Image (cartoon, rainbow, N blue to C red; front, side):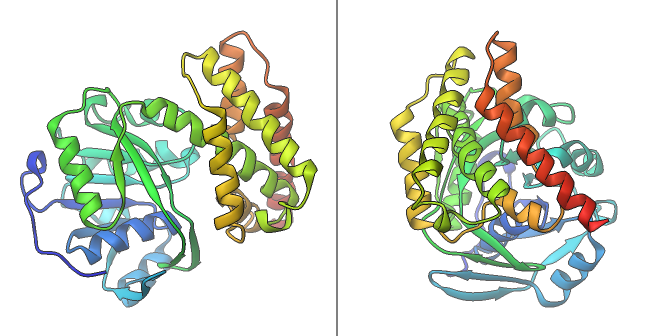
Length: 324
């Protein structure tokens, strides 16, 4: 990785001030890569201890290319005065409302909010705070493990797909994609973004939920035919629900991604499993739970996803009770 000089990014008008909201594994990875490319990045988080550590020692990235330590700035939202040209939102979906409320004073009519969060309904949640025309939604496949505050390990291939939430493809969207690609964050603009998002939801509904319930990474599950059958059933049911909601999906493509993750990222613990282990609330409501809601709205049922969501909720509650 090597730093790059300042560039003009079209509608952003100047070297942008980027606020990365949520300094977890994904936030620190994206923010670290953007810092390495020469961008002005502020990490926004709610954990004072984590903020202090990032400010003191910077962000540490461990990638296939090596280990990098970069000076970084982090703060509570209320302590930031400079408006944001770009907000990269990496909070859990259940925290989106509170996160957007906390940074309301950083938003202008020209601010772009990029959500690569898991699950369904992200644009709808964010549009309560900023015009939908300034929202970019998408997905990312980045295996990122948080080894400590501001310390992330990411190994293996990664990529992101994005599109503006209004599906109009404004000129500035290409500027944003270039900004990310120039920071070695492989990003493609995809007009079929709803199919991409639903495909990622199907992927997460299978791997995240099963790993969270069983308490293990894919490597210990892949030999089991029961695991593969259950994962297949989750993917198939999700596709039926997506199509009932007007989104055409490719089952073979989704299953190939599941198999790729089982093969290339077999030791990576999905975020939902990491949440269970850390006694945190999961994003199950925005993934399997959202699939169930979408099924009901289309006059269908989703018994496999409903059962998985209930089991994760039960596992989550046990984890939270143990913490207490």
